Length: 180
Ligand SMILES: [Zn+2]
Image 1 (cartoon, rainbow, N blue to C red):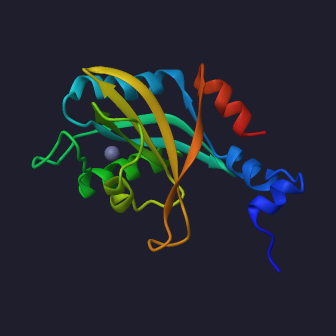
Image 2: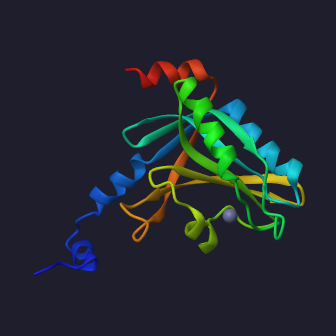
C-alpha cells in the first residue's frame, strides 16, 4: 500500500527528504562573473545573449569561476531564441580543459520575459547535470537571475529543477572551499 502525500501530511510527517535533496542543488558564482552575465543581457537587449559557464562540480554544487560570452547564432528569432555554434563550444571546451576547468552550465537572457525556462529551453537543453542560468531583462535592465539544473538520466526523462544561486565575493574563497 502506498501512502499519499496528503496522508503523510495529515499524519504530521513533513516532506523533508525531498526538500532537503532539492535544497542541496546550488550554483555558486563569483560576483564579477555574475555581474558580467547580467551586463551581457543588457548589452544584447532586445535580443537574447548567451554564454558558457566554466568551473568545477563537487557533489551537488557547481561553482562558476569563469564565464565565456558566445555569439547568438539565431538570426531567425534572436529576441526569444538562442543558439551556440558547435564549433564555438568545442573551442571553449578545449580552453576550459587547458585551464583545469569544465563546462558546468550555460546562460542566456529573456528580454521582457520572466527568468523562467520555456518549453523550448528544455527541448534544446542537452547537457544533463549542467546548470542553465536565465536572466530576465526588462526594458534593457537586468532584473532577476535564476538557475535551473538539467536533471535526469537520459534525453527522454530530462527535466529542469530549481536551484539556488549563491554569489560569492571572489574566486579565492570558492577555490579554497572546494578543495576541502
Ligand atoms: Zn530561454
